[in-house]
Length: 112
Length: 111
Image (cartoon, one colour):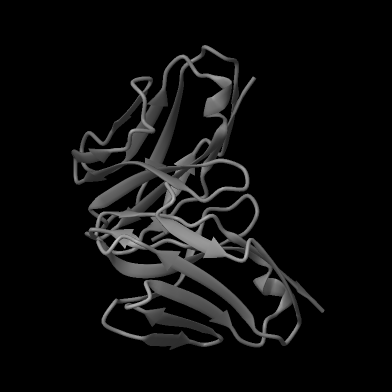
């Protein structure tokens, strides 16, 4: 198993554009998490899935953000009408049930 | 998200010395206590974790000490090496659901 993978690794976009990130978890893991990390801070929880069900969403996840995990495997995180404040590292993690997660390398988003 | 308080913010240690990072929490719903290590430009990597029914866990040069009554846990890095230079996060697990990260400690180990 190659671990958690995320694509793209870097994304530069202009304010107002939509962006989509993909996460491929460890295959036998049933939980998939999205976190956001800004410079100099610890990651903050955004949302998580157990199989294909989205079980929790943070208040940080405004209505411009949407996450899916359609077949209980990979997940996508879409940000609509990006704002400069969305610039951050978006981290995906997966785990088996409620164990501590394994993180991917992240997608660094820069909104100009 | 001030549920977890981590200290110090930064730490400079000589090679071979002991690095100690502390984490304090309030929420009794935390049920698992990991430490993550993060290098610049990388995702956090699980370093070591402890269950609340254990007071200490050691893996190689890394030890977690857990004080349930004081709601504190700490990471000790023995014989610190330059390769240990990274940012360390305590990230207790809430209700076996999600990790709540501390603010991080930037460790620098000088030769």
